[in-house]
Length: 181
Image 1 (cartoon, rainbow, N blue to C red):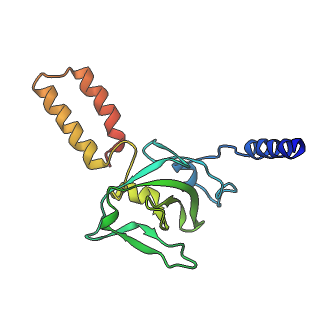
Image 2: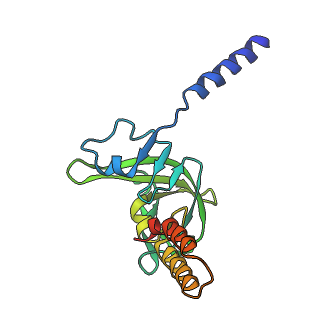
Image 3: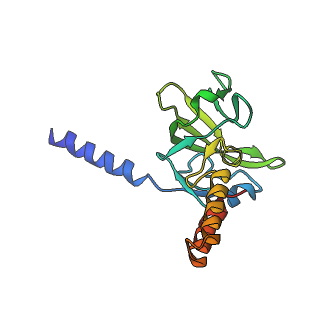
């Protein structure tokens, strides 16, 4: 029994040592001339707006960029089950990031995709990440472009009314400008 327990502890320790963080950034991926060797092992992604996303984090689904279906979020695996655009019914849901992957070719360029676990445990979501954030289909950690712009306008109104100082406004502006597209 002691040998079995020792083997289990060693195995867990060995597996734990292999869990290294592999970071990728928007700039690295979009400027890549070849598919990066770490393409399937990414555990952390730094988005175009500077937000950091990790495997296990929760993302919030926004609203479709078209009337009833999402253009950059789908379900299915593309092999056994065809990719199907998600419907408006998933708006506002939170999904857990399971995996990042890089898609594309040298000629067309590379982009980051993520696979997220459906909050109901039925299937997974495939997300063309940067396009989904850009179009409001996925909320970035900070906020959508429209939300940031609205917040900045409120701060400007407060400044004009003398409710906040110029320094407070400038601080708020520097926080929000990275979300405005």
